[in-house]
Image 1 (spheres, rainbow, N blue to C red):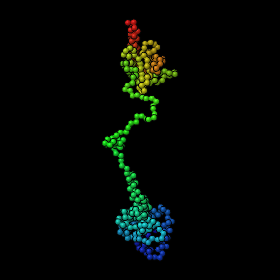
Image 2: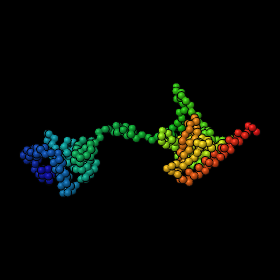
Image 3: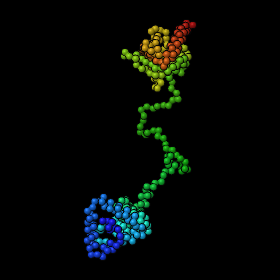
Length: 324
């Protein structure tokens, strides 16, 4: 039905003069109003496709002649840019497919207020509506959004009058609040090993027998340290991650203490009993040391036995010194 309206200019001219043209247009409008929105869109799309394929720019301008508008605005108003319907006004400067002057597929002037078929600055059936803000509002919005980027000096904390970059001041005190403790930074921490020399060291895992079972005590370097003044040798193992003392006792030849024996289930584990000071107080502990290989366990056994001999000689020399 829509194609019958848009097909040629002859029926349009005939309808202007005929007495029944108003009734025919009203009938066609009532039929169109009975259609759904998807059906209307399909009719518009079909009409646009037919016009685009059959008409050139000049033919379309001749075919789309102005039609006097009725008292009530219709759905399709021809030749009036100010009408409220979908406008098929011929383009003023551009061709069939758009331009600033308007057209079938083009954008109309923003001030016309009309509705174009496929959108534009004036709004359309398939297009976005135009912004109604005036030039002053648009300029103000552009000024607000286009904020100037910070200068290099400002990004780094500002600059002084000479243009040199000034960093932010470090906060070292909070006024009105006093910490309960004060920590001091020291260059080195004394461990009690400063006056000793290392005779043996091997990474291993220490166990302690508690509550009827073996419990892991720590993983670290099992060391034999000799005091330079007294000559006495002690066994020391610290946990490698925390530095906490896991075992600390003198290596002596006094059964049942420091009687080194292999474990019944593995030749990589050595077991002995000692008077241990790891927790600060003297406690008799049953210890076990596990190595990676049996060879490493044998090397520790030899160094441990040598330490007992040296400690016995140091104890005898200390006992003879007062008499001399």
